[in-house]
Length: 164
Image (cartoon, rainbow, N blue to C red; front, side):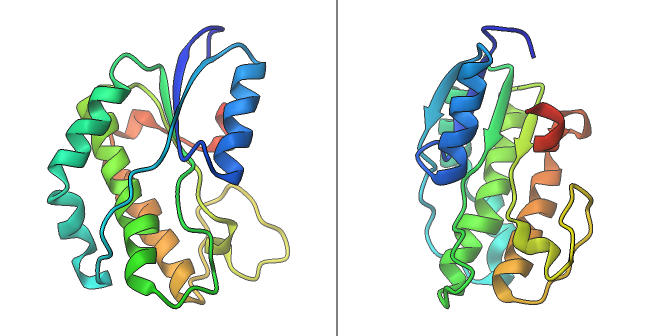
């Protein structure tokens, strides 16, 4: 990524997002820190429909994303102990799809989706592969979000380790 390139970091107020934003700024990127939109709780069986019906949020994000060289989605709910499955669906499954749709609408050439390591489950070594061990509800939801963001154009998807 060229020095001075504009990068929007969604979830920049969180632990991972703030670190990503700082690392990008240290490398000379012009970072726009964006707090993740809070979406209403959604039942797991309604997640895909929620992505499709979030047109207003997609449009608002697309306006913020236009002209960016990249968007990093570091937003989500990392509380693996949460029992509020519907809130986890909104944050970890629906939001990645909404961000991906906004990236596509804004014709941003690169989307980096930062997912939780929980999707790889109890593996001895975590890596950047697509390996998934969906042993819990939060894990299954994080994996669902990973799959929903795949609605963005294939050329726009990059893993965090390849960009940063």
